[in-house]
Image 1 (cartoon, rainbow, N blue to C red):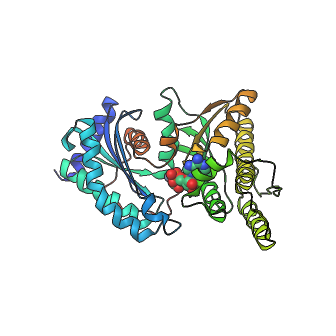
Image 2: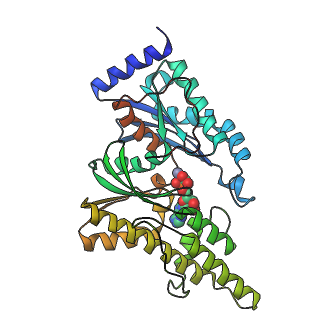
Image 3: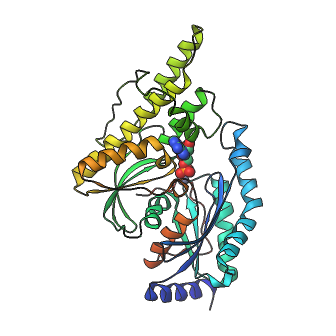
Length: 352
Ligand code: KG4
Ligand code: ZN
């Protein structure tokens, strides 16, 4: 029996039992992460090696440096995740890995490592979409959460509103026409002189500022649930340049707070509209931007008023991690979605 036949047989047995302990790997951008997750909901261990300090001096992620660092980190991170779980490779039932979207070189490191681990242990290999991973962070944080629900996915590379019809079944309601929300935060932060990734620092700085200090344009989009952040970003850049050119002070905290409020209003308005229109009554947040304190507070208040059940993972599960990949991997395994050893990275992989 060859590897793929054996893996398929083992996967069928796991599906029948409905239980699986999964070793998950994530390396799509600037975090090398590994986790052990039981039955899609319980995190047994989770290790994240961040490369942020390495890229900060360049003002953004340098793909080649990211790939090289993933190569260095992947084995120790996997070893640590297994050690923290008190397990050996043979003890896990399957290996899940992010195969896209993301940086091709970075993804390839995780994919190659996962293939080697799955082959060595003769266990099923599960390919996971990174965005689906973000959505699935909610299954870990909220063990009672089941589809259907609407999910706002806002990260450094993506801003989507999807309706989660069932596990792994998504309807795309809207998406960004230009910059992703996290990208917009990072670019605005850079203009204010904050280091990469500026989103969390802009969030912090905003606490000291007046969110109504800076007039920003109203966002116009084609689709009812689409996003656009480039107009806000350009308005902010122009106003900061004008202040600098005329020798005036740049009130960084006021600018940060105003920009953050504009982005958050836009994210919240469309997400609530989508929930109302689709009659879902349940909204989940996902992706790095879901860690934003203003977005969390704004949506908490609005959803309470509107009678919408709001679910948010804790910030550590919003930003990139492997536990969310282990959760998504479990549901994929239960649907029989396996990969062979020919699995490749797909940098532009779509969710729907
Ligand atoms: O999901 P994620 O870790 O990686 C991607 O898949 O892109 O998201 C990272 C993005 C970055 O743009 C980062 O600045 C943003 O999420 N982010 C935040 C906050 N925490 C992370 N943006 C605003 N406020 C935050 N607190
Ligand atoms: Zn991500």
